[in-house]
Length: 167
Image (cartoon, rainbow, N blue to C red):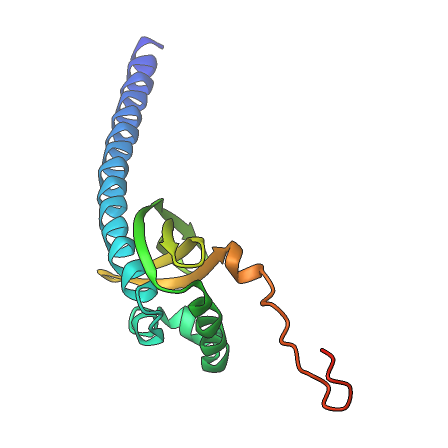
């Protein structure tokens, strides 16, 4: 019985060491992924929003993003985003990278960041979802939230030619 308990204790000790080593590797790799994905986000967001260039987004887009996004819809969004005016200041982003394992896709490395920027018309929050393919980060999702985007522009008034009153 003593020999059995010693073997069982040895197996348990090995398992504990393997788990600790695995956690240490994941923490190290996680910090590395956080750093590189944040650098990518902090470079991509200002490149896209500084002049609202669709090309800046398209050249960074993942195949998943491209597959579900119509060019016409993207153009409409960027026309709407241009209502924010000129970029005054990009204030950086916060977020983190994640590693997930799924039966369908295997290991997936992704990240989500939220950046803040000040424009002529409003402050804005830019949410950037990223995915890593090989050694390259790409944009999986892009969303802009700003008060100015939800405000209705003032109605245009036309004078009725017959009565001279606004319609």
